[in-house]
Amino acid sequence: MIGIYFSGTGNTRFCVEYLLQQLETDAKAYSIEAENVSEQIKKEQEIILGYPIYYSNLPKILNDFIIENKDLWMDKKIYLVATMGLFSGDGAGVAARQLKKYGAKITGGLHLAMPDCICDEKVLKKTLEKNRAMVNKSKVKIEAAANRYKEGRPTKEGLNLFYHMAGLLGQRLYFYNKTKNYTDKLKINKEKCIGCGKCAGLCPMKNITIEEKKAISHESCTMCYRCINNCPVQAITLLGDKVVQQSVIEKYL
Image (tube, rainbow, N blue to C red; front, side, top):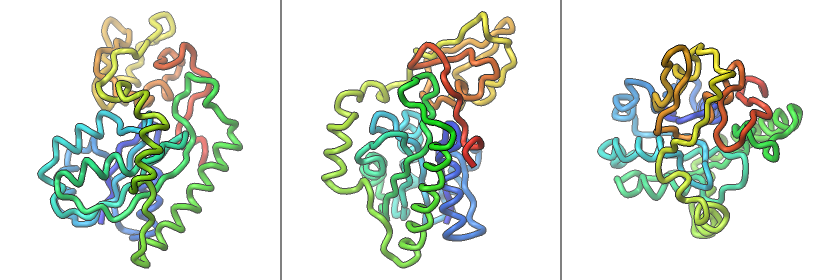
């Protein structure tokens, strides 16, 4: 067994690694950005696949990863872990339907509420105490899910028609275009930017470059919020116009 994940600010990575600890202490987790991730998938039959949900849909980068590696999924047993700030309906189901096209066998699904990474929208922000409580609640849920998995009765969240309709009517129907393509809406305040290059190094899409000692955003942002939550001078925004509260998983552990 292995874990595969895409994670913006660490929520999903933490959840996948914590689940693996409960199942097999020596099982390893790999980011989809890792150079050897395809080789690792080929070697293993059981896979825990984790990802965040955006507008009740898959991040564009993960959707592309599934398609680009379509020949790897045949007969793989895949358990899906979807992390979310708000209720997404069929968070596990959106990946399940895609993977089934390529012959994967979906063994279960788990939905986990985690601190919202959208740090430039005040309405989505919670206190430190509430975020820590959310993480602890998800840890308890992961432990219960691990026990069910070992007993041969894995959780099936997000996988039936009810969940599908909830995801479709909840957000995806109205915001599908938000995740259909990469976005060019990332904003970098040139006056604040100090050209440190941290954002460029963190970006999974290589969407940010440093030119004339300033960060420049291009047209392939996958909305992971990794750069925004880690910018030391809060010079980057996406949906909002001002960083309200930077969020990374290490703050809540």
